[in-house]
Image 1 (spheres, rainbow, N blue to C red):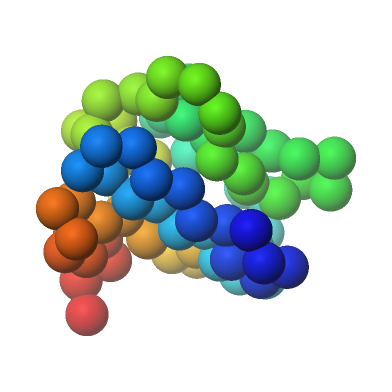
Image 2 (cartoon, helix red, strand yellow; image 1 turned 180 degrees about the horizontal axis):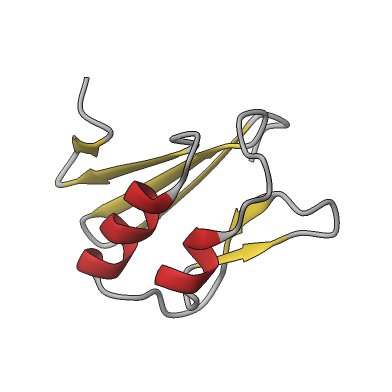
Length: 82
């Protein structure tokens, strides 16, 4: 993880959190609680361990009010669309 972007990949899913964009709203932790958490500063992080389903991760990314979460599947960016 760099200071600005956390990147994690499992199987065919890759998640990127643009940490400077995150405003600590937290809906990602509601939609995909096994995948996302908030760190001590209230900024979203990607958890270790088993992740939620792709559908839940996708919904969590869509729930972010500032689009701080990017989701890739099979190497292709699926959210947000460019």
